[in-house]
Image (cartoon, rainbow, N blue to C red):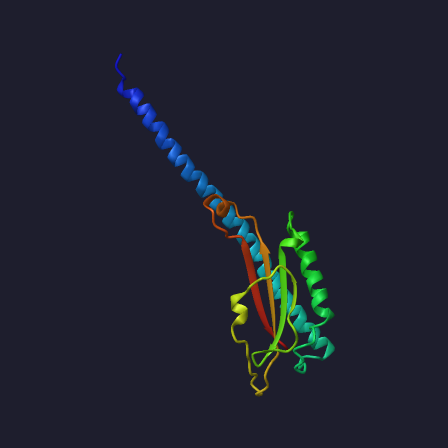
Length: 179
């Protein structure tokens, strides 16, 4: 008995369907991975901006914006309180937030120099933008103190696990000028 053309076509269709199915599954995994990363990126962007604004306003309230250069001295308890605020906010807004995968850094910079030792907590954010020179001169010729807040989080990397590469870290950086 000879193979009929319809039987040969059926096998061909199965192979093509499998190839298209694998491609479609990879596309779905990639899309889901991007959605998760964008959601975390948005949360980190809002929180880093809010944190930079909070520390800027606190210095205005306490009247201490023009700090003397003391690069060996830690920023202070304001940074610890700020870390606690950001951490609590992320725990409330993210259902499966893991504090072990979170990184936080606050820098005070004036004339491209650290005014205080940067405050870091959690994982290292390795922010290459953070190494760029930060300097701002006001209209009165005074060098302003800049507050830089960097947040990062290790998100699940479904697509990266499938293709053997790592695309898991999402980060955000905000800079605010002292008042």
